[in-house]
Image (cartoon, rainbow, N blue to C red; front, side, top):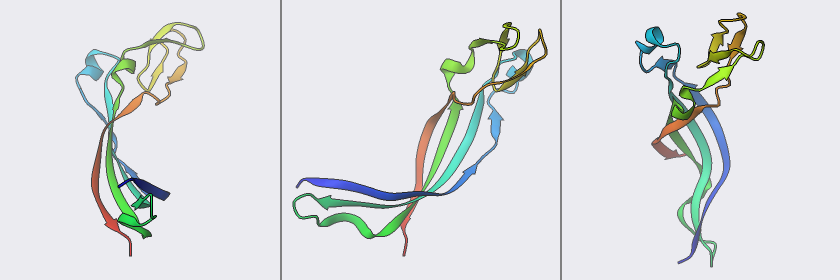
Length: 132
C-alpha cells in the first residue's frame, strides 16, 4: 500500500520558557566566558495529522475531521562551536569575549551578542490528544 502522511493547519497555541541556567557556576568566577543553557521550552501545537491511501484517498490512520493537540518539551544549549569565539568591539576594534553581553575593557562600550548560537539538544513529545 502506498500512502501519504498529511499534516495541515498547524497552529502554535502556547509557549512556556524556563529561565536560563548557568551550567557551570564556578566558570563565571574563573573565566569571563561561561556556558549557558536555556533549560526548556514547552510547546502546545494543534494540527490535523493523518495518513491516506494514495489510490483511494481513504484515511488509514488519524482523522481529517478533528485536530490533534500535541505537547512538546524542547531543550536548548549554547552551541559548543560558538562558546569560545573571540570577537572584536565594534566601537574600538579591541578583542572581547562575549557570551550574551559584556562591556569592552578598553572603551567601556556595552556589547550584546545575538542569541543565534543556541541549538536544540533534545525534543520530547509529552503526549497528544484528539480535540473533540
